[in-house]
Length: 413
Image (cartoon, rainbow, N blue to C red; front, side, top):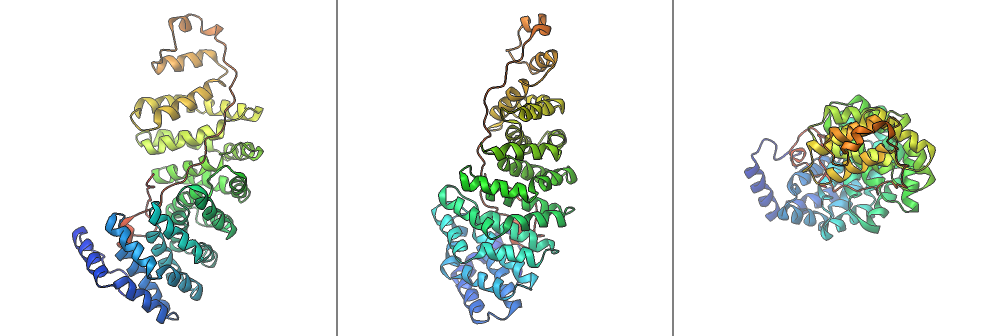
C-alpha cells in the first residue's frame, strides 16, 4: 500500500488509476490486509491513505467506489485500527482522512454511509484521537473534517449523529483544539466547519447542544478565530456560519449566546470581515446571517445589540452588500432583514433617512428629506433568530492527492 499512490499524477491519470484499482478489487484487498494484520500500525496507516486516494471524487463513479469501500467493511477496519493504535498519530490522521473522503454525500446512499460510520464508533474514535494527540495539528484538522462530514445531512438521523458527536465529548475537545492551536488557520477553519454541523437544529436536544457549545467557550473561540485570521476568507465564512448556528433558537439561552458573541467582539470583527472581504459574496452573506441571529430579540439587551451593530457601521455594510452582490442568491433578503432590523434602533433620525437615500431606496421620499428631524423610528417588531443550517460534507480532491491536510475547505451548500 503506497501511502500516496497518486501524488503528482494528472487528473486524467488519477482517474484511470482509480478505475483500474477498482476493477482489480484494490479496496477489498486493502481492507482484507488491514483485518489480517491489525497489529501493524504502518500498514494500517498506508492502507487508509491508499483507500482514501482510490475512492476520492464525488462524481457517480466516486460514489460507487465509496459504496464499495463500505460494503467491503473498510469503515469497521478503520475503526479497529484507530482503537488498536490510539497512540500512533499517523494511523489516527490517515483513518480520519479516509473517513472524511468516504463520508461525502447526502443522497440516500451517502446518508447510509454516514450511519455506518456512526454505528462502528468512528465519531468516538475521532474524538479520542483529538484527545490523545492534542498537540498534533494534522490530527486535529483531520478529526474535525471527519466529524463534519459524518454529521452532515438533514432530518432526524442527522440530529442523532450530531448528538452522538456531542455525547462522545466532541465540544470540549473542539474548544481545546481551538485554544491550543489559535495560530493555525487550518485548525480554526476545520473546527468552525465541524461546529456548524454539530450545532444545528432548534428542538430541545439541539438547544442543549448550542448551550453546551457556549459553556465550552466556543463562541469566544470562534470570534477569536475571526480576530486572529482576519485576512483568511475561509475562516471568516466558517466562523460566521458557526456563530449563526450557535445563536439560533428562541430559548432563553439564545439571548445569552447572542450577548456572549457581542461581548467577545463579534460586531467589530463582522464589520472588519465585510470590509476586508467585500468582494467575497460568501463571506458577506454568512456575516449577514450571523448578524441577524445575534441582533434579534425583544429584550432590552437585544435593542442594545442592534444599536451597537448600527454604531459599528453594519447597517451601511448591509446596504452595501445588497448593492454589490444583489445577484447572489439570498443576499438581497439577508441584507433587507438586517437593515430593517437595525434601522429600528438607530437613534439619529437624520442618519436613518440618509442611509436609505444613499442606497437609492424609494422609501426615502422628498418629504423625508424635508422633515428628517421629525422622523419617528418604528418600534422593533418581534423577530426570531433564523434556523441553524447544516453544511454538506467536505470534498477536497486536492487533499486526497497529498495536499497538506487542513487546506481551506468549501462547503457544498
